[in-house]
Amino acid sequence: MSDYLRHVSIMIVDDQEFNAKILRQMLRVLGASDIRVFNNGEDAWEDFKERPVDMVITDWKMQPMSGLKLTNLIRNSPDSPNVFVPVILVTAFREREHVFKARDAGVTEYVVKPVSPRGLFSRIEAVIERPRRFVRVGDFFGPDRRRHTKEFDGADRRGHEPPEDKLQLNPAAAAAERKREMGQD
Image (cartoon, rainbow, N blue to C red):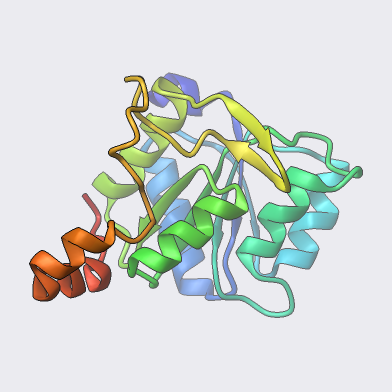
């Protein structure tokens, strides 16, 4: 992987200078050398249009432009020079609803803060070793939301409420499932 990262350009977008420094250092340890850092989505977007990168690592909550808005521009703007660039979202939001919102915005991978080297490495590895096809469905354009290669049998309804009969059988378990937080793994 370090040989691969030696040859790619990476953009870090985080309004917290300390977090950006940590991400930059982790990437350097992994072998990356072409790393650009921005403290807001607007400056990152303007630079991306002029000098596209091979990978974007962005925070979610920033002003004046969030990481989701930046992802939306990368995926859907006619000015985007690379709509397929992998976008790794780094955020403190760990609830399932946030993960689904990021997925639906076209984010490629999701990392929960505090970021560990292992967590970041696994997401970069996924982008490199197991890239997902891009799809356009209605207003959505981005990596295929389904990670599994098996055929869809209708039983897997990621991000949707379970059928009413399952809610009635065990309401406490259904409520716990809805509130379950996502972790690094």
